[in-house]
Length: 155
Image (cartoon, rainbow, N blue to C red; front, side):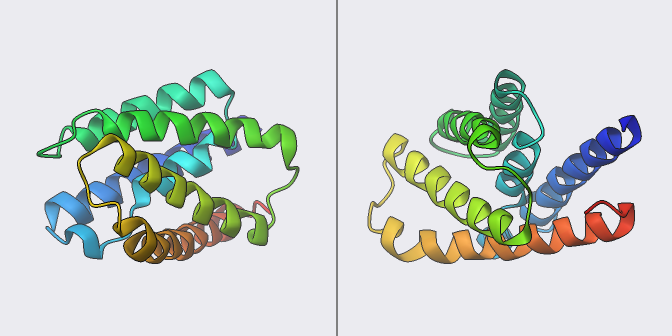
């Protein structure tokens, strides 16, 4: 049991590192999937609410430290979606791929909505760019989770 816990923690750290390499190191930017959001959402399902919110806050501060404007918006958005993700365990049992797909899609859409509300961004992007970005995160998160499950033998 403890091995699985550390294995998933390493998986989450790996997602964050890949996110930073793609967005900052390689300079791909918006063309790369938002693996930080996927990491927060996937980790939150396995944590208590307070711990998940703290993880969301820390990863949000990390992401905001790289932003030129809107410092703090990602921290608030990540904390909120992590808190909701941790509480979703009480409402929805299981981790089927269909549930994870819907969970990642809605989580990314909610994160973008909160971010748009807190920044002077164009609100029209909620109807155009957000669904595409949420679909992209959903596919990338499902692939990453599928690879993790194949490597560890977890269901």
